[in-house]
Image (tube, rainbow, N blue to C red; front, side, top):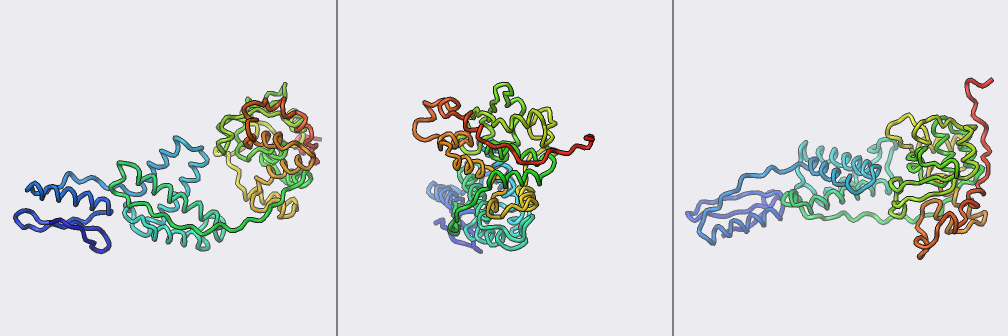
Length: 371
C-alpha cells in the first residue's frame, strides 16, 4: 500500500510493485507528493507497475520571478514594475545565498520569509542607508508574497511551488500629522536648486502634480494659447487618474514657460529637461535641496518631493479654495456623482483657482552669456 512519509523534511512517497520490489521517491512539495501517491495507488488498484512519466524540469525561483515580472508589465505601470523587479532581485540574491544558485521554489516557507525580514531589517543591508525602515521592509516582504501567490496559481509552476503561507507582518506604527511647506518655503527650495531639478520643483510648486507626472509631461501636452495642460492617463498613479484630465495652467507658471526667467526649459519634447534616460527623481536629492535651503524638517521630512503636492493643496485650502476644485487639480477622485455630471474647468472655476497661485520669489537664473 502506497504511503507518504517525510525524509529529512521533504515529503516522500513509498510503495511496492506487485512482486514486492520497494520504491521511494522524494517530492519537492506536499502537493506533488499527494499527486504521485494517487498515481501509484491507481497503478496498484489496476495491477500495474507504476512508471514515472518523463521527468519535467523543475524551474528555478529566478526563472519563475522573471515570468512574474513579464506578467506584471501587462497590467501595472512601468515604475511599479521597476520597483517590484528590484525587490524581487534583492530577495532572489538572498535566497540563492541560502539555498544555492539555481535554487528551486521548494524552499519557500513562512520561516524563509521571516528570515528574509530579519535580513532586510539588519543594518547595512540597504543600498544607501544604514537601516531600512519598517515601511520599506514591508514593501520587500509584500513583493515576495505577491511573487509566491502568483506562482502558486500558475498551472505550469503549481506542481513545484509550496502552498502560500504568508508571514504575519508587524503592525504599522501609528502615524503622526505631517506638516506642509508654505509658498515661501517652496520658493526657498527652488532658489536652492540648480539645473533640471529646479524645473521639477517649479512645476510641482505650481501644479501640485506628482513628481513622476511632472517628469512625464511633454510640450505637446500644453495648449499654450488656451493655457491648458493635458495630464495623460498613463501618467496617473491611482485608478482615479487613469482617465486623464485637462487643467488650466497657473498664470505664473505659463509666464515662466514663455520667458524662461528662472530656469532653462530647453528640451524639444519634454517639459522638464533631464540628462538621464530613466527620468527618475531621487528623493534624497530633493531632501538635500530642502536642507540647503534651510527649510525646517517638519515641512518636508519623509516625503521630500511629495511635500510640494501637500504644500500646493494646503496653501490653496488656506486661501479658501473649494475642496472639489483642489481635489480635481491634483487628480483625486470627485465626490458622489460630480465626476459624471460636472465639467470641471467651467463648473469648478479652475481658472480662477490657479490664478491664486502666487508669483515665485526666486532669483532669476544667471546665464553664462549674460553681461
